[in-house]
Amino acid sequence: MTGKVSIGDNDVLLVVDVQNDFCPGGRLAVPQGDEVVADINRIAGRFKHVVLTQDWHPAGHLSFASSHPGRQPFESIEVAYGPQILWPDHCVQDTPGARFRDDLHIPHAGLVLRKGFRPAIDSYSAFYENDRTTPTGLGGYLRERGLARVFLAGLALDFCVRYSAEDAQREGFDAVVIEDVCRGIDVDGSVAATRRNFAALGVALLGGDDVG
Ligand code: VGL
Ligand code: ZN
Image 1 (tube, rainbow, N blue to C red):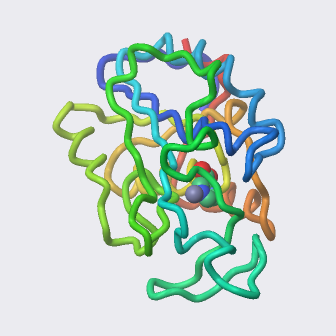
Image 2: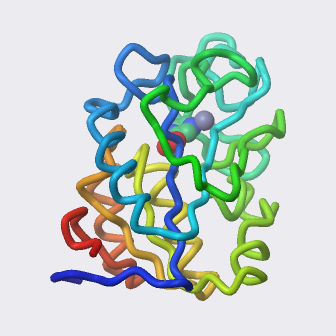
């Protein structure tokens, strides 16, 4: 997708996990994660409909390496629903790291969707948890609101943005990732895998300057 895209009443901006722990100084810092905040604020101003997602784990969450003695962050293990990457403790409910960045300023956002709050299931996608069957309810919300095209921005490109965009597309929405307002973690080639999957599924990529 190139050139100016005009944003209308059936479009929604999904702002993914712009939280302290995913920015420099945080527990699971995404390199340059803080750089996207000002641009996201600006782009959000173009949208009538904005949804914020918030990674929101209980202490001792299954996705934390610290919950698995002898395991290290960024290793992968098998859990009940399949492979799961282990992370440093991050976005623990009601801690400063789980808060949105102070400079994120989108007062007109209509929904804050929390995810990853079940102790034994991680959730990268804003639509389905990592067991790939537990819905968050976001699909129903968007459909009921008549929102058809889902633009995505935020952190991390290769995890929560990726899985949210893929699920949006699979659920029959048109997913558009605004690539320059995302940053990736890149675990074992996950950024390259993200680009391959976007191409295979028809997830569109766009620059922030193209959002008119
Ligand atoms: C995320 C890893 C673990 C993300 C969340 O927001 O991309 N990544 N939890
Ligand atoms: Zn998480």
